[in-house]
Length: 243
Image 1 (cartoon, rainbow, N blue to C red):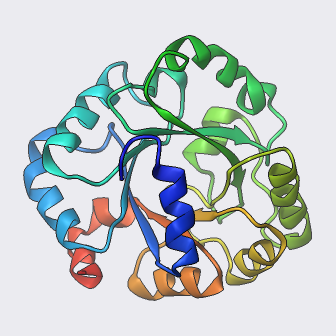
Image 2: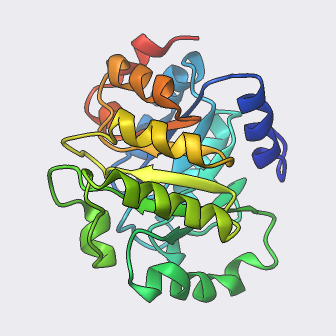
């Protein structure tokens, strides 16, 4: 996937009914010295994208990690930043996340304004993304850092309406997030109802710990599923996802 074609390739893959899978790597939790071994497993798996980011990451850590990832895989590297400091031109694309589930102006528009000086002359493909945090049974790092409340997982209509509002505001993607290490992934009913209501690609992440939950997310309507913590805790999960 050449730079600036990532979104078009996502659309093509969805049209061809291909399943997309992103491996999420948190610079704070990943040891660069393990990259060669880790990416041998990634490259043998059905992964289609690498997402890089975390809620709290030291300056330069993301850039160092992205450079190492690029040496070990040809998969597109997409930034999933928790803050402006995590933006690096060494990646291929940036999820320009607006936390539309919350009401903290910093994460709706403030951080975006602060990032412009870093991205306006970069080669990053900018993917405007409506980011929706859904209650998952425990407090997540996203909740703590953004000081926003997740949406009630039982009020599905409100989540659906929020996703639709994001689409009508011009977002290219909707990202349903249960949070890193979530006790409960986003429900099948929520995924299905949102997919029925929006026309843009739907990303689902958080709390997906095994192949059965992954399959359920796809069957419910997820276009791209993100797995992070499950791989951090058990790399053998890759064995279930061989091409």
